[in-house]
Figure: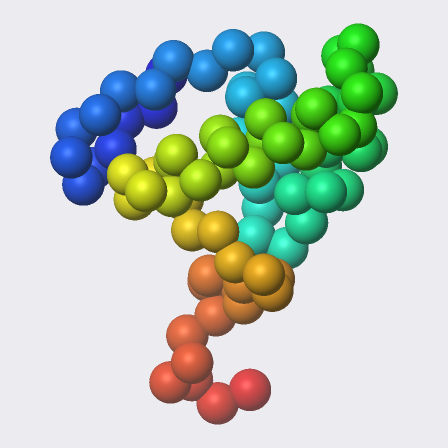
Length: 84
């Protein structure tokens, strides 16, 4: 179960959503998560899995639970004010 800190909406994750949630690391594209994790672990075709995964990610994004991006997110632990 996941709760949005923005609006207190609860999301109960089914097994597929749990795989997506656990694999969402900010650098792995959703298409790879679907191909390598969802389609290999569940009996679902790639087209349906992608469509459902995009809908799931969109819903979580709308509630501020996660950030969807076309590009990998930078390392969250990196402080941009620190010199490398």
